[in-house]
Length: 299
Image 1 (tube, rainbow, N blue to C red):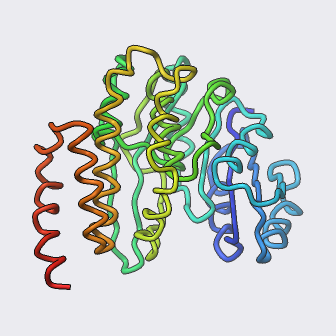
Image 2: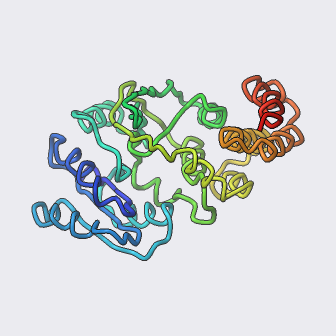
């Protein structure tokens, strides 16, 4: 078996069917679908079971008590049998022909550990935004830095990972928030990467995305310790730790700024500058910092 689609789900009974159908619509029969339900209290089990009954050899459903997205994805990957793991969120859908695009890239270079692709964000107001990955190269350090500096985007549903790599690098369960950031940082530091410069996924952008971003701060600066884990990251990369921490502080700054919590936003801005004074030249953040005083005074 070549591919294992893993789908973590939590109370997505109304829409998980669309994700499953988008996989079943792909050409070929070299895949399975592994769904791990992270303690849903809606009728997810019944909705998924209907698909299992129709495709018992292809779709496998498991339930666990609520443990969070990192644990759920790790569990699904442990249950997977395919050579490659294709992580898909329960509210996203594959585009037609997506799997054929991945097959072609792997066939062209069987040494690849990771394939990343473009995706299309779909907003509640009907807007669509296309994200296309930048070309990466054989220099893993440059790929790591490109991801840290947000010049390279990797997204669940738009990446495929060799299962043997997942045995060594998993989603961190020691933090709650930005687990993907840690996971993809580690992957880009060690993996040979192929790129599909086309979208393979439609990703739903929820109206509560701002709240979701705030929730992702629960990991705090422990996120940095999780990234710079000597067991996962080459020692040569540790010279980027302060820059990475400063950039994370700026990300937290932006989240609070967008939430109109200007006082908390400025505190994160100051922490960024204290960690790495060169961050003052990140003009898009500096402009928001200046504006925060005017907005604060007006409220």
